Amino acid sequence: MAAVRDAINGVSNGWSTGNLDLYLSSYADDFRFEDVTFSKICTSKDELAQFFHGTLHAFSEFTVENGPMNHDDERGVMEWTMSGVHTGDWPGLPATGKRFSVRGVSVVQFKDGKIHRQSDYWDLATLLRQVGVLPAA
Image (cartoon, rainbow, N blue to C red; front, side, top):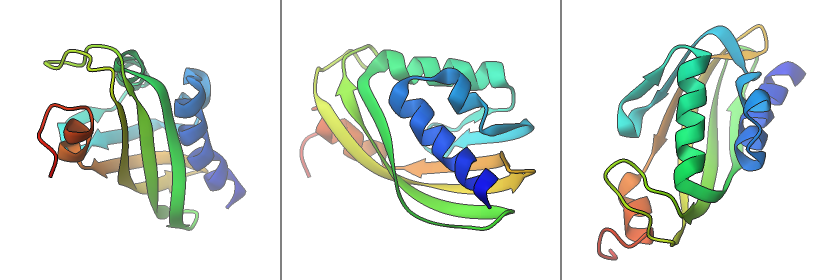
């Protein structure tokens, strides 16, 4: 289970330090990543790298902090919190300079200690309220 824990931590530490190599090393060669909120699916490391760079372009001080998780060597569910400052343009949304912090969850399948399939779920409306695009709830 140590390899699985390394893969989980590689994702959050890769995001939090901007280390693309660390982030990508957490994924199996035949992975499938899905950001359900945006209906974004990545099946190659080039696509995943573009997703990574696009996110870090739009959000400075970007971090991912792991929360409670339950996993074995084959599958897992992890809560996490992503935070940052909206300092770059995001498709259809000019930078606001405002800070955000949003909780999410990943449902993951592992293969040989790497992430084979990952589906991320998080609340876009909360992020948009925090950066000032939507009115406060």
